[in-house]
Image (cartoon, rainbow over all chains, first blue to last red):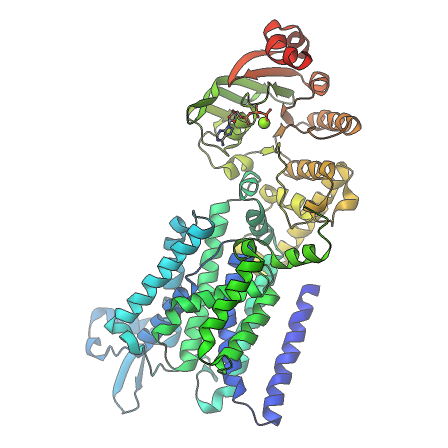
Length: 353
Length: 254
Ligand SMILES: Nc1ncnc2c1ncn2[C@@H]1O[C@H](COP(=O)(O)OP(=O)(O)OP(=O)(O)O)[C@@H](O)[C@H]1O
Ligand SMILES: [Mg+2]
């Protein structure tokens, strides 16, 4: 239980921050804190994959985008002309469709956000599974390049598809009502509630990941990271564990993509861009690799600064620079070593070779 | 009863025939040793049995089932555990955690159970920890439980690796030079331990260069030279075998 004390601290901090912005009249900060929260869900999932299981992915923006774009497309695409078709009747029967009116009063029949989200996240999971089987046989640089290739493909597909809005992306994505009265939306009045929705998702994800890391599975992942051959000979299905971790982290990225897209009311191709994937990797690395709290705090702080425009036009350059620094001072750190342990070792006088 | 039966095993690396038509059986609850000069193919043989290396041809029957071509984790799951000539611990994990990984085949919690940490999962985790501590204590390194395995002394690392293999409660244990790098006292200790393991009902297949240890504890010995089996007999007979004396013992005493 003691591993959850920091989470209680986080919860208190979150409430304090919200109250502070209220008293100081700076609630506009909550918007970036909400967006940072969603990005950090991607980052902690990637932290499990990279820091614990030791497998890099330079394609996670792709999974985020699959979640976001699919949910956006399904909830905005007007299917009213198909409404008499058998499959539409069936979809309607199982509650997958929702009728509404757009800003100009035109009748829209599209997927209901819950249904869209389930399809979007499920699709991301299936794609991760299919991609993961061959790609996770690769190691180190080769795995990095293969996942990078995947990310580029996803980016180009969204950029080139009329159905995904090409360079403009998809806008006017409706809110996502999770429960009656709890809606993921960027509308002005919902700023505080959405801050709490986003952070509740982060806390739930953190609880599950911390549980997992401290479980038999987490131990197996660290064993794979440290000595894959010995892990396999000890009875661990190394390929299966790597694949499941890859799919789990992809699903987390897709969930974040769905939520952030409904919050922002849209999504554009930059979310699928390679620079986004690089950023996620840089944030996990700067957080200390096998350090989920490091990944969370770095993810929130640096994304918040980035979203506030703190890095100006050097935004992507900052994350590139972070990667260079890590490569220089902890080259293995990026792909497999635990940075924190490495630093500890450095400062303990190098008693080990 | 035969627990392990290998037949016509072949493995080559490029032009080098590292294991050539090797076959023998291992009786249950016995200690069998594989000896031979450096480069004879002993470690390669272990890697073929445990599935770490794919074999070129031949068959490996373990507990009545053909296991050649299976992934190592499946073979481990059928009750085969091993240690390595060059110790392979999980770095960055404590001695106890290393041994807890050894309990993998004896526990079940998967991703969902792990994420939700249900009472049943917590109970299993507690039993894994307790059992693993028992094995550390059996190896008399219980006091090192929370020390990072990589920072332990060499002999202690060997002990941790031993405990990790035992933690699986295997039917059979492959030990690749368990006494390498140990001093005389430690070697004698390892010898007693291996006998004790056999008495617990675990079959042991052992590669070892320390002849007095091998002669002391083995029930039977196989001799390999340049990838081929040149003798298989009781320790006393092996000591008298001219061929063996010439290529192996002779070399050492020369
Ligand atoms: N992965 C490999 N690739 C190429 N050659 C190998 C490989 N593994 C072993 N060999 C070669 O196969 C031969 C047998 O090696 P092996 O390690 O099995 O010998 P060994 O009997 O265990 O020797 P030692 O007593 O030194 O441990 C050696 O000539 C070795 O160089
Ligand atoms: Mg060897």
